[in-house]
Length: 411
Image 1 (cartoon, one colour):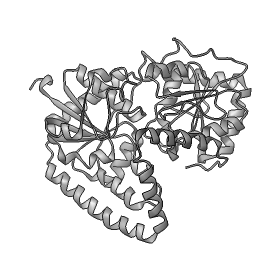
Image 2 (cartoon, one colour):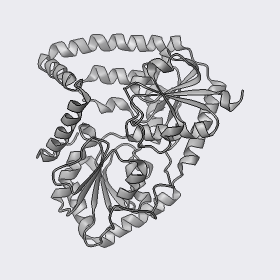
Image 3 (cartoon, one colour):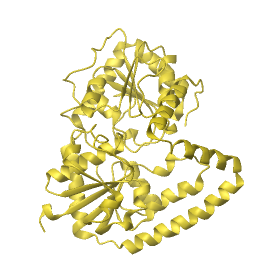
Image 4 (cartoon, helix red, strand yellow):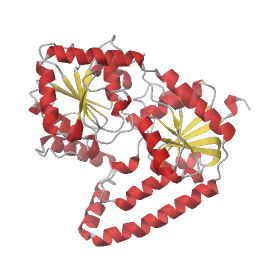
């Protein structure tokens, strides 16, 4: 069978801008360039502009789930837990699961039935691949899953020391960049802004995938920008403050390293894939917000230490593989999976059916025990099912409220 006869389908929730979608697009575009017929099946509604933030979106074919289910594939690859539950509905010779994080951690601990449903996807009889060593180890130890490892690459044609910037850096006043979505509790984006202010930062910029144009106390806001524009933002800033508490292998600090900056992060899972404390960045253990302020204050006032971290970051960047190398490994996994694996959709569906049945019973019990929470969940569901303009306005207002909220609670 020739490569160009092989049909691959990635199942995604959304093609709006996000780190996880960026990784999927990189691998999918490389497969297209290698002669594969690639489809991106999308759960959420989208239009021609939704994926325009990525410069290789034009080579990819996007279909709704219903449209994609009318075709047959050699390999269908789930890319997050909701899509994994849909695998058996697609006609394929074999199935895969690209695990970019342990996604049950995205949800509050009190939502145990939902977390258990998410974790049930790691028991599916499919081929697994992941991007981080800690996830590979987690799947092996908890679920006896042997996942292939394909570390993420970096677009070195975009993220580099040389190139345009929004504004020149100033040694006398290091510029802080906060990156992340708002309205996602474990991203702690608003918290990062508050801590940068507490540390005495003169100028704070924000790079976000959320639809916001203005934020209190922030000098510049860059929302949903194309990836080449993000590099210009990185090259204008000195310190990236990224305080996520759940990650797979997060890319923004590594992209910042390639553009000549350093970072301050929590000791989140995946940070040790490339971040070394006091060598290329500062790692704050235990979600210690006071320590974040202390470390930022030091970097803002100690140019020598800041330069040492920047130098270490550049050395890390120089050793890191590009996307061509990373996606070549992903393509090898695809080839091996097609050649060696033959999964049964009936076996997948049996596990999914059992998981949904267990979730339904346990969630009914949880809601019955907490009626006030049930009312709140329904109210929020109604709000976020509003028309797009109202949802966008809600998100903008919520982002501003998060920044103004004095709470320093870390999630």
